Image (cartoon, rainbow, N blue to C red; front, side, top):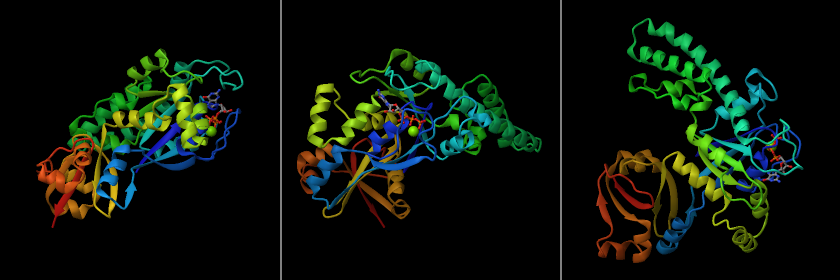
Length: 359
Ligand SMILES: Nc1nc2c(ncn2[C@@H]2O[C@H](COP(=O)(O)OP(=O)(O)OP(=O)(O)O)[C@@H](O)[C@H]2O)c(=O)[nH]1
Ligand SMILES: [Mg+2]
């Protein structure tokens, strides 16, 4: 299960967004450091396609993919040197697979800004500077260690040393580790470094009620930082999350919000992480959605289900979810020649329904 850490300046709206996404009851407040210990909640990734497949096949149960959100304490300038809740904050981010960076872009005068002004790009840079400072310390000490190993003429250590030198230079210039290409010869050097700024980054622009677009200066900054970006009014989404389904749908219509904040955020995250979804579904069995890196084979998909299934892989029956629903089930789809037999090297497509035959 993917873990996403929600970070940002104090009062940016992190806990409000967290509550909207998770229907959680995290405390929010118009004062800094409302959150101290991280709030953690698991949400299911909504997927109408799987619901339709499950209804067609008469599956017993729908099991959706899940994401764990961590709502972390606000970060302040100097955190890398222990300001604010410095180290605890940074430790909490280390545990996550991707970072969701909430930046205040709403103008509400009721909510104080810790810097006393509203400037989203500057806010993004403040946080990124702290993350780079924390990584610089880690990378410099790792470079020290690897430099000693590299003397022993270990080719991977030599490649790692060269990469770390580039990393230290980038971080010193305020650029994230994710901007430094990792040569093949350096192996898993990025995993060993465990940098905060190598994690995929998604910005959430917390916009005014009634707005829908990402402010252009934030979009420009995101493109330069290799980050994805979505615009969400955390306050509206939290209010929507408290309504029943019919009321929420009506208000969404009025606000011109076709998808929920959660759906938009997941859509952007899937694109950022280059993920697709595939399904397994059996009659009177579970219908399940799982995420997969784009470009994964049928054998790789099998490994996601169970290592035994991957080890005993013989062949796979594959069909796009829409064709399966159109034909009304597996046997009609098979009769129509739409259920394909694929081998282990078949590249999975988004929305594939797969049945793996294994020994
Ligand atoms: N007008 C408006 N107010 C918002 C919005 N999002 C959050 N707020 C308000 O801003 C204040 C801070 O929100 P929180 O969600 O507690 O902020 P936080 O980032 O979790 O803050 P810390 O935990 O202190 O770091 C609260 O009073 C929220 O109601 C928004 O989209 N619009
Ligand atoms: Mg909070």
